[in-house]
Image 1: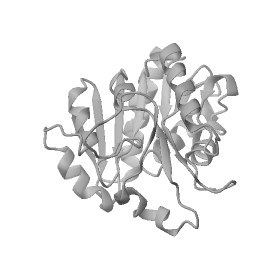
Image 2: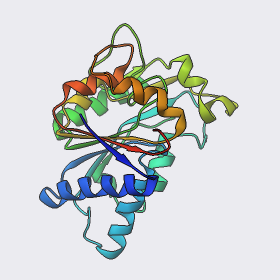
Image 3: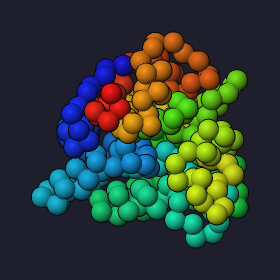
Image 4: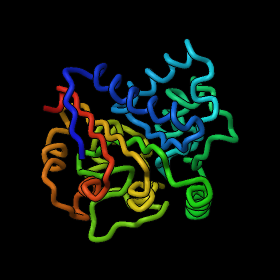
Length: 236
């Protein structure tokens, strides 16, 4: 893994944009995995700003969503879908035929995960996978455990995830997740991991140790040959 340190969120996001734009310039129709959350949000803002001055930017980009919460009350605004739609899909003008996602309110989560796995097999592998890291070391919603699942799947949520951040305040918190598996992620040609916020310091310190364990899923990124880890000063 290549670790990069930045004085602030803005410069971290700009570096992420440089890395992404270089790949898109070389392959305009690449398959881009979009993640929700605050850490990669600056990247998306940079991409939206580029599109404003260069309308052709990302007009061929294919996009797939990394993961989603399940079991939320109908109409909940705490979905990954709303987050990526607001920050990326809509402002970037990604057409429906170039965007694949799992419905947070699906009545058939296992079936939807199977469909997403089929998309990855037909359209993939991912060219760029955008990631954040959880306080417990999860990437996407691959939680610590004795075993990890390689493909897109319905997953159990760890207590450490459910007791973190805004989730604790929800009237009806998620009861499960739907996520790309570690196999899907590790097949990506390039992975960009954004780490921002003082709450991620312990996970970041753990990640720096090149030891692989299913109890810390992010450690599996050490097995990949092209991972850029972008860290801002709030973490270190």
